[in-house]
View 1 (cartoon, rainbow, N blue to C red):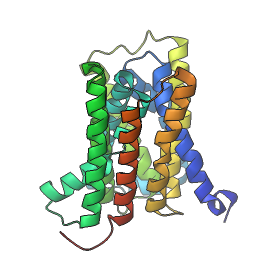
View 2 (view 1 turned 90 degrees about the vertical axis):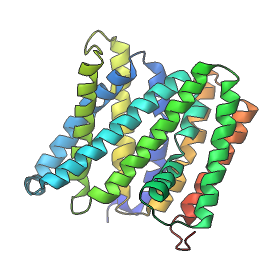
View 3 (view 1 turned 180 degrees about the vertical axis):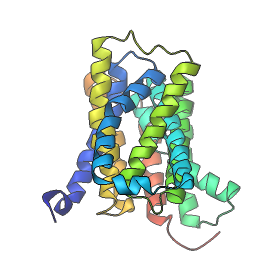
Length: 294
């Protein structure tokens, strides 16, 4: 067991801190959301490709069309998450965007219960209801500021929806695929989705400032590799529950960074709504595995 495996819980915390910088980097670049997503993946993908082709070439050759299709679906959902997230951060506060994007358990529950007719339990439902109330508090207070801010909140909720779909796709399609191989192909199809999105929306591939590209590159290294990839690695050495609980810290870290860097101080209602969402998501996370159906 190496030093990282022995200290995996500390590694999770470091990954959460890395993830919290995502909203900050989005604010520091003036590139459009589609370009941010495309170049973030463009910078990060070669690293994952190198690792996969060197260490897992045999596993890559044995992938079936069904497994590749599953990776493609997950990659499209991840692209939807990134695009919605970058758009949301550009129109609302870091505090609102970050905490609303945490409501993916609410989205997963809705999809599971109403589309797949799965049973859940009362405690899990209670946690999601509490998180939903927090979302209403934040969105209502932000609507009083401007419709543009509300649009940012809605896009942040879409970011939660897409990450929920991405996680559900992972649960269904990742079986039998090594983690490194799965992550590479998901990121590849995510990049491909953004490339097509650039063409369809006629978003320029060039013309961005050196500063814009620098911050996107830093985002790729810190958030795509230091957060997303690390979380996937940590799943092999600690529980998903621990990671999900620790991810709640991202809201407070990102909000603190926005206060320091942008003097973006949350309103009282944003604080109340944010704490309500964190409490609801934490309660849901601890009870979603209970087997008492409703």
